[in-house]
Length: 324
Image (tube, rainbow, N blue to C red):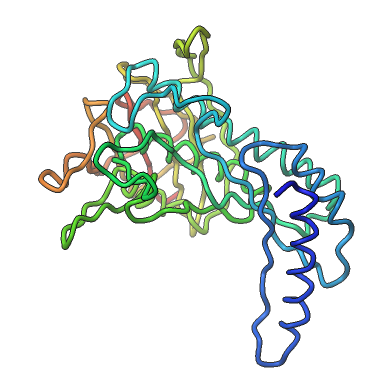
């Protein structure tokens, strides 16, 4: 649908549900409108101009944008799920970083129509979308899940954490066997993907309070077709919950470790652990015959107060946890 037609259909649907949910036996509903595929501000503005003002019932509680790390205007250029060059490694991760611009731009656009932020911005589809896997039904969208997918998942979750004031809900759409799934099955067999392990490690952030974190790192250059592009080698986020700090850092450099100096502003961390997900093969992944090729390592350590230095392996995700 064009945004105007969809706005009319949504208002009709929401009006019916709004009336329906006033019945004493009904639970209140949170009504969510579909937003654009990607950072299409024109689509968003046209939808809200047509939808007009929602009354005191607030028949629009959420607006859901989708973002997959690909350019929908042309064929996929980032290789397949398991076969890609080093440049394609960076190209995909670079595409993933644009989810942050989407969040900032779409929330700013929503603020034009909803300055009190009664309508929450939602990212309810995101991740990687590779070319069809040979031998698998096209409409099933099955794809293998590698270390590259895991890094993109971690970078995206860090983005959501950094932009916690703008995103009210974010969830990966496919859990089992479809696109960037956390679990792959074959009959009665099941494996956990690298993306699963990212979600497992990032539980430390869930329910916490996002902290402002500033990360400075060198840029890595790469070729995307005829373009020469660059991106920072490090990204991450931090949060605190029940007196415990969680700090996640992604080193997206394909071959070089990163010596990272961290400044905790004089705080001391005790009972600390560092969990790391990394592999020497950029396309490393778990299979039904080798289900634990990629699993995180966990190391306990003592952290000094103030500044300290740690080395992050290349192509890695590191999560530090400890009591402040």
